Length: 442
Figure 1 (cartoon, rainbow, N blue to C red):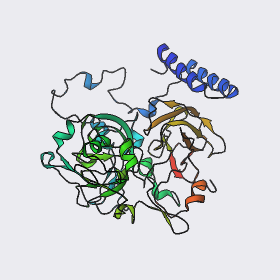
Figure 2: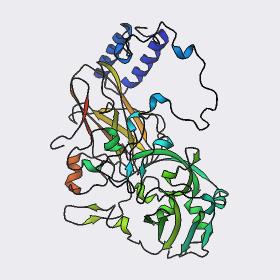
Figure 3: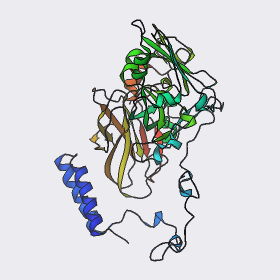
């Protein structure tokens, strides 16, 4: 099969025509002319480079898996990925978190499609190791400036009205090692402290209505049941807006590493505010200034002061393919793909640059576009072996535009490790391999 079938040709042209609508008239004519030539000439995307030379499983042979019976049904009662996907796993950086009790592992964004991160690949962050909690013995305490202090069992929480929402979750230190220079070689390590899941639970506002918050109650201390007693101060406005007490993720019970049996979820905010293994909510009249909001998760500014309570994860984006883990293997047409997200709301648009920000072109958004959620974008491009400086620039419904490193450093300096949402650059070499890069004065 050296070329395309008629049906494949029609589908490809339909896709290319849709992409071309985003270009100006001159670019569009050239784009469609090249596309027609590609299809009419029966040029195939998949060449010998993607096959195993001499394999008896290749056409016209009938592959061995079609000539034998497969495994018995229910050999694996809980499903698992194919053995050929064994490299699609979370990974750690040993020098970044040598202490495995207080550690982090990162999502393989380069291998994911769509916007939902599978439960087994959602990034992990620990401050005191991974607790194993019996849900029958776990309780959620709500006390402080309330009329009726209450203690909820898991059964009682699940009897209350539930909600299901899709939201990204991101560590504010995502990409933090890149503030001064490129250090991480790979998308998984520059942006992998990020995942996006479907979450099910009870609105925090529902529980607060049950206990009756007193007028002077303006803040909530959320505390986890892990060994570190992880805690954060949460403004009452967020609690009453969209915060959720979560017990299910992507249709099943929370994984232990994601806070089983319950966690707090603050959509669009720093991941550390979404306290895992949640055991206590105390209502007070002011923030508590505990460890993780004084010595950590504050942003050191050039004048020596620190920003506090920088809760919202700003608009961000990154190209996922090509990337260091997904290089160009041969010349020809490629779909340049990426993801964008904003803690302020919906993504409204994304531009990509092939020349390090000298010029920009629109990249159509794809699939679902949901507030505080990953949004996919792509751009069809015919690569002829020329070096590229690939960038993406997103903006959200509030009008916030993703900044350059120069713009970000002008305001924030270079001493922080948090909220690094600057435009990212991948350098594509003439042989197709890709490296992490930063441009001077950009």
